[in-house]
Length: 265
Image (tube, rainbow, N blue to C red; front, side, top):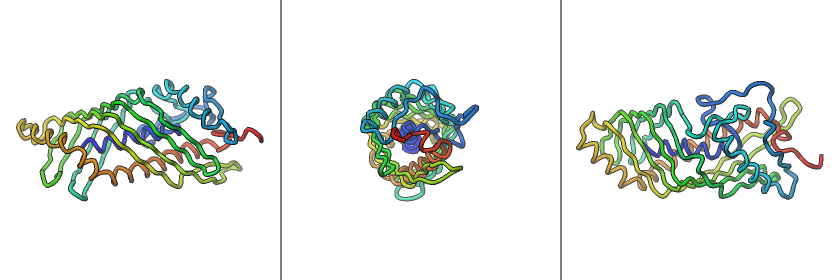
């Protein structure tokens, strides 16, 4: 269902800030040559009083490159973002579903607005808030289970439109030593999100029964808010787990001094 795709989209938002790939083991863009930061990246010093201003300016300046992908930083193409497969299960509360989505295409990421980007080096804390006016997701789906005691069964093409999505992510790091250099790893992630509207269309529900399919699509669109709350804990946990693992991948590749050096060394 749509809320499982939302998790993947919000994952991308967090990873854009820290320059890592979505679902590294599936869509990772392999870096070539030596492990070093791309020359087009602006150096922001962690002991500079203008660190956050520099970080925001740097993020905005590389937006076109982010959308095209940056292999050196493990970032795949973001516009559109292609995810080969997403598997999600929900078996608690009012939702019992097994679902698989293949060839997922997400469009609209490039139209984001950066609301906030802050770095607190003394706490090894990274904060980013972003808003997307609209995201369109398409995929081939297979789903089976129940929603609020109503059976849900189908496989085919689906579309989901998400409107006014805002996400704030806070990541907390910890230093460790590797090959004589200081690196970071993520020890905690906090995610909050909101959205204004969801509209979805699942084709070929109930083996192509058009009447039943229309009623179910109408039901999902009319009750998306309550359904979103049902899956919120699952989505938050999934985001936290994937963000921590993915960001740690980049932090393991580049030392703290490479990513954000001290100016007064």
